[in-house]
Image 1 (cartoon, one colour):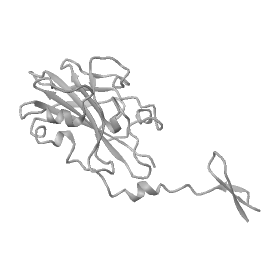
Image 2 (cartoon, helix red, strand yellow; image 1 turned 45 degrees about the vertical axis):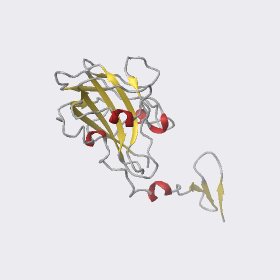
Image 3 (spheres, helix red, strand yellow; image 1 turned 135 degrees about the vertical axis):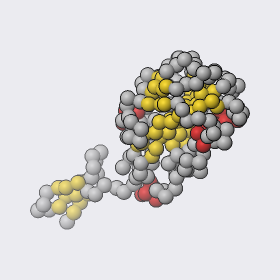
Length: 213
């Protein structure tokens, strides 16, 4: 006879004569079911018609992870990690830049468009980066933080659906010819609507990954 013991720990199967052993973990059926569904790269900011033709000359990097590598867990979203934005730095800002904008999107979300995890505008052109946690809303640094995932303001770290496979998180930095006229707590749609063919002087990206098995 086998009996499942219910507790806060992984369930145990009591098998008489053979002791106890962990029960098989539950399959993350929703993530597995949605594995073939991904937003795709076409609607990333850097692929917008008013952005993509500008030079990809900005060099964006982080000491927390290399291009294409896994993002450390403490940068993951609330309930998974500590929701601390990673340290970022950049070079290559062209002459004539009046402001910078930074967007983080997840193009692997099982949704019609990439999920926006960060929108930061009015970044001074002389700024060379951000320290860890500096893109959280409680940090006052003169940067305007917009609305992203579910209306959340500031950085919202990776928290993909379990079992959906690795997700990419694309940090996209734009060098702007003039500051953008945006409402309070702007959305990504507000930022894109404010662009003209002359607005973006250059751009660059940094991609990290995160997976919840």
